[in-house]
Length: 255
Image (cartoon, rainbow, N blue to C red; front, side, top):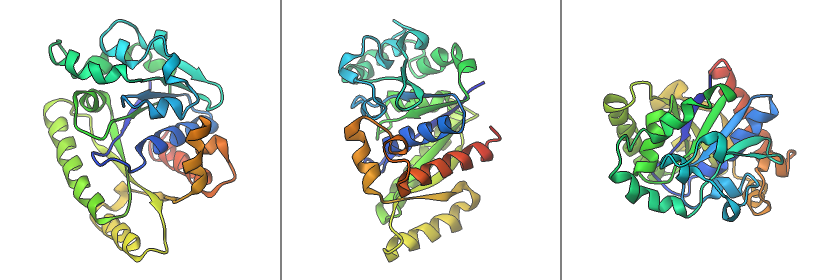
C-alpha cells in the first residue's frame, strides 16, 4: 500500500515543488513506484515533471469533483520515471466549487484508495496556503515533509504550519504527523543559515533529516527543461543530495 506524504509549507518560495519532483525522481531511481499529485493551480510540479499542463484532458480538478478517477487522469512521465496527476489553472476554480459539496476535504482521500496498491509513495505538492486544496492533501496523508530555508522568517512560518498540522491531526486525520524537516537552498558560508540549522536540530531533534540540499544552479535550471534536477543533471551536487534524501526517506520509513 502507498505511503502518502504532503510536501507542505505555508511560506511561499521555499522549494516545495523542487523537493516534490526531485524526491519523486530519486525514489523512482532506487526502484520505488511513485505518484506525484499536483495540488497547486500554478501546475509547476506538472510542468517540472515533463507533462504539459496546457494539454491535460483530465486533471486533479476532475478527480476532486469526481468527474474522473485517478487511473483515468494520471499520466506517466517517461523522462522523470514516475506518474503524475497534473494540475492547471482550472484548479483555482475548484476551491469555490468544493465549498458547497459533501466530503469537500476528503475528496482526494477517497480517490487515492482506488490506486493505493499501484504505488509505494504518493507525494502531494501543496499550494503555499491553508486552503481546501491543502486540506484535501493533509486529510489523506500519513505525514508531512516540510522543506525550509534556514532563515529567520522560515522559523516563523514553521510554527504556523506545526499548529495547522496539530489541528488537522486532532479533528480530521489522526494519522497525520510531521515526518521530517528538510533543509533546502542551504549555503554553509552564511553564518545565519548555520545558526538556524542548529536551532532546528536543537528543537526538533531527529525530525530534522540528515540530508541537506545545497543551493544549486542546476536544480534551478531544470524546470525550464521540464525535468527534475535529478534527471536533468545527475552529477550536480543538488541532484546527488536529493538521491541521498530519497534513500534516507525510504530507510526511515522502512520502504
